[in-house]
Image (cartoon, rainbow, N blue to C red; front, top):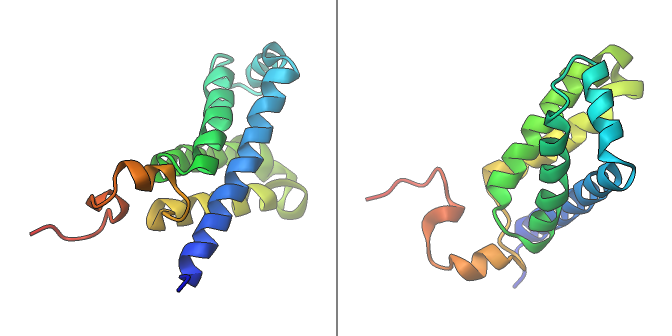
Amino acid sequence: MLNKNEIGAFLLRVVLGIVFLAHGAAKFQGGIENIVGWFDSIGLLGGLAYIVATIELVGGIALILGIGTRIVSALIGIIMIGAIFTVQLAAGFLDGYAYDLVLLMIAVYLVLNGSKMLSLGQLFFKGQENNKPFAKSA
């Protein structure tokens, strides 16, 4: 029987992966140098643009495949916190940080709960307790 919670986590994982794959690809396709310049213009270290774009692109692929879901989601969560506080907060809720807040909460959910359904990570680490970070060990 299918577990409704696992189906939900799978859907959240794949959608978050698709969103960040698209954002990361757009940063590289549009000219990462432009993103570096924009980061500089808002007072961030320009080189950080390479890290953010790479996490978005590679992390998006990893989420879709179900590899390192908790770690990738944590990194995406950090990016979303940064985006909210450096750019979106000043624009207000609807015009600014509402979308980023939703993405942040999806990432937090995946950090806390993981996602094993159709996950390559589950195949590689089957039987290990890596999918239960808060489980007590004997």
